[in-house]
Image (tube, rainbow, N blue to C red; front, side, top):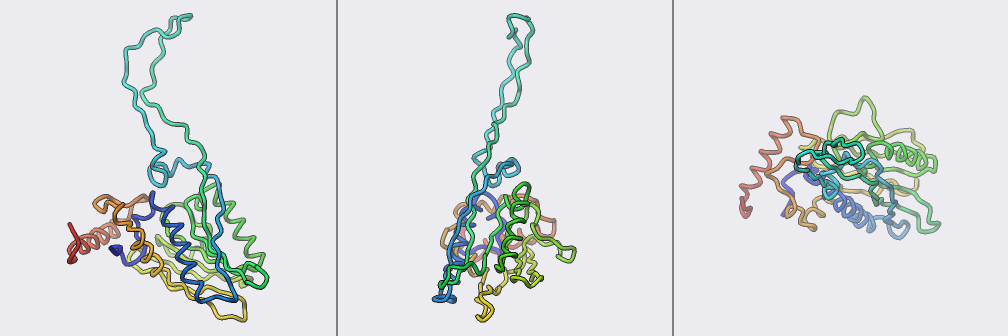
Length: 266
């Protein structure tokens, strides 16, 4: 069953995100390989980071970490036999939140003659969009630019801060950027909730034409292949942050319209 949204589906931004991230990276590679072979190869590279402050993602990206235990109050009895002073039982017990290991897949395009990295496609993870991960990611961006590597960044998450920002970028939930190596320029595709994801160029060597990546087609394909609708309760609100009133009304009308389509059970 297709997604009820024309562009990014905000319901994919929660606990499904890890699966979406991996599937989208793999699908992007599949879309690019026929265009760039045999001169170039597209490879999935996975780097591991520790989310040392995962508390903001508890219940969103890491639902299994949210274990809260309420203690029933009991009559206060003397606990310290030496002092005879009773202690007050804690009414709430919370788990100690440990760092979470996050595996982040990227798509790297390398020339097959010398195995030199030409282009990198980064799909941003929540850990890339808040401290301390955002600082490390910004350093990686600079290293790639210094190494003459083209960088495409796909930000399909509404929460967090963007590694690249500019006052002329409109306030939109999603953003795609392309930094061509040594150009000093960044191409920007702002995307609203109502818009489809863009078809973007993927730069190669200077003498070769750009490959073409249809991001919406890639997202639609993985949504259908994974059957994400089976894991989504569209009667609930999407993962935070909360949508604006206008976006919420549009989303609900979109979902209502989708439910009325022939063959869709209400």
